[in-house]
Image (cartoon, rainbow, N blue to C red; front, side, top):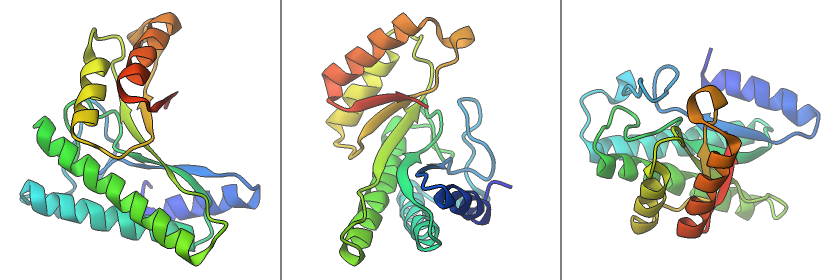
Length: 188
């Protein structure tokens, strides 16, 4: 039930009420979370370069299909709870390459849509992490994304108080991310 057709169906319902949506690409055949970042079957056996190209194409095509169906996309999330892995990749440099291609696809869709419609608002790009309670985790991620020039707008975090600590801690962690990256932050 987590496919393009369902995203369009839900997005069109939201558009009827003048709502924007966040499209969350998990880059997996099912839900992706810290313990499960499996490669989509269609990408199984691909090297990182080929997978990055496939990720770009999938993101670009899917996002255009969603927008062309009348969905008002305000934000796209590249990955879900990515802490060291995404789309089956577990080497951070490879994950960054995948993130870069996802971000590049969103920027291109935004540019193409703006060229067709001058009132089109640029789509915000979020990268989504988890485990803000782990000391230094988010500083390291923020710095590595900055060093790699990953073109995103928002550093998003899961936050479940039971697992991730207090709101004061999250605020402190987010302040560090902002100081390092200059990016917006959000609880996703």
